[in-house]
Amino acid sequence: MIKLKKQHWIGIIAGAVAIALDFAFLFFRESKSLFFFVLGIAAVVIALPFVLEIVARGKEEEEINGMFLEFSRNLAESVATGTPVSKSIINVSKKNFGPLSPYIEKLARQIELGIPVNTAMQTFARDVDNPVISRAVALIGEAEKAGGEIDYILESVAKSIAEVEKLKKERRAAISSLVAQGYIIFIIFIAIMLVMEFKILPLTAGLGSIGEGAETGISGIGIGVGKQIISPESLSRPFLYLLLTQGFFAGLIIGKLSEGKTMAGVKHSFILVILALLISTGAKAFLQ
Image (cartoon, rainbow, N blue to C red; front, side, top):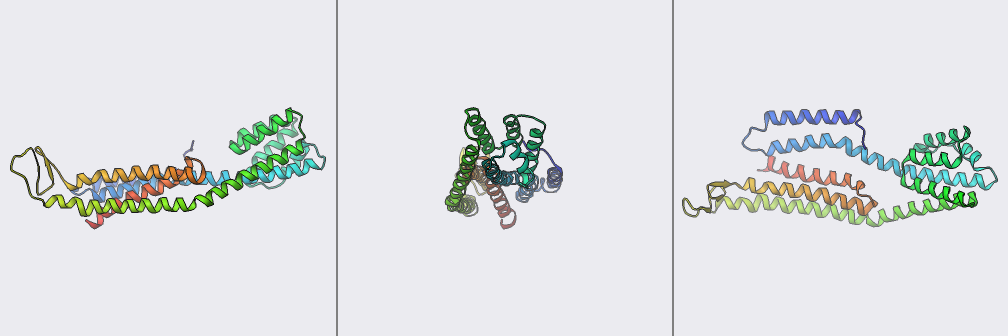
């Protein structure tokens, strides 16, 4: 769960001010195109800090995985020389492991206080809250209970983590072309919606009318259903909802394909939704 920080509050307050000014000055205009465009910009201002936080967390998680791989290798090398695993952890903790360093230092302090290595490792896994580290610690604990050689276990864990990271990079490289195709297809989809909205729907405004007082007809303003007149603008509004929905779910699918996690698709969903919102509302505000 994301905790609200200073940058989040700045985005929320700035977006709220923009929304208030938008309603005050643009809501009561006959054309709502500019109103929705400014509303879209306000939504970007509010959501951007949260999306950046999610992206930063994803990068930090990747860095933690890399640092844990380095930690496992150093620990395996130290244990292989005959140094007990507890003393090896204390010695290795003096090195710099980036964002993982505070957790490793805490692990070393717990061992220095006499806490069993297995218990301290489990606490370490809970603190980091990383699936790769949790699996590795569980594997080390089970192997230690079974009486396996700890240096061989640590070496195997390091190799396993390295292989997982290698496979992730290969998948991202292989799927990068599909990610680009997903963006291109979505932009083409936006273009098709805009052509329908600006070139096809306005044709309904010039088809004349069918009989006065008819229950269903086409008028010079729009399409009449009974006594209700539906304008081309109201007919085009569902196109925006369709673009936003398509962008949101397309982004989640792109994230799932490229990184194996739906949460990784939040940044793609944000980009696609903002593209759809700003292009659609901006075209209505400045081209009509």
